[in-house]
Length: 69
Length: 158
Image 1 (cartoon, helix red, strand yellow):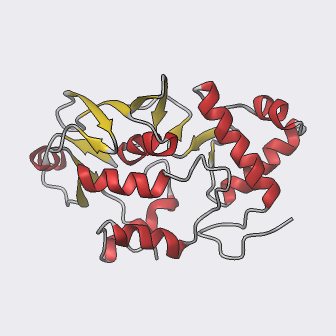
Image 2 (image 1 turned 90 degrees about the horizontal axis):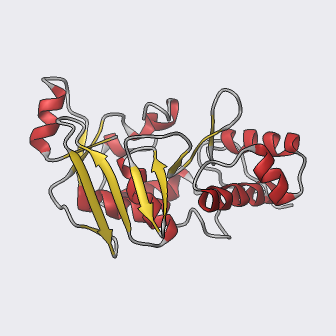
Image 3 (image 1 turned 180 degrees about the vertical axis):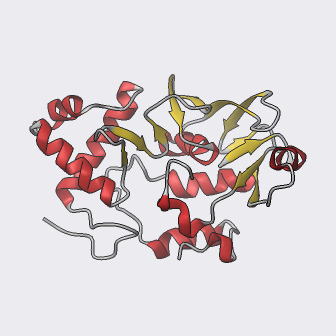
């Protein structure tokens, strides 16, 4: 899971290899805040697969690649 | 002792292990590094062997990640070892495991942050200021190679 200056830099880095998924930084930040925002809360509970999938869905990361199985 | 009935990907986490996990995370924040078993034993009053056994259960539940020697490798989003993602926030500094986690440290601390990393392609240094959950550089992109269903097959690689 790597950061790049732009999509052009992703393609240069891949050098013809198949792309994974590209996530714009604003969407990544939205995901990070939804995913990690509870980590230091005293009442932290492990999330279920369904709860994690709901976070991915909510930030627009949908489709087979983003299915937690 | 209550047990979570709906578990995400691994074993259940009971209330005692949740408390151990919370102290481990708190010490990670306070120390600016991963705590060792002695740090957490002192903070909890537990024997070090009990701390290590609890960490193993938490590892199995994907609540933290241990290395082969049983030390904390990741308490996501915090990384135990230096990485290419250094995050300054709330007057301290930590390493993150990846770009996603780098933004997660400010999220977990509920504080603004500055991420120091580089472009994985050209290796130009990147300084990203995150204020009120908004990054100052909106052109960056994140590339995810491993499909979500396989993330925990090798979380270090992911």
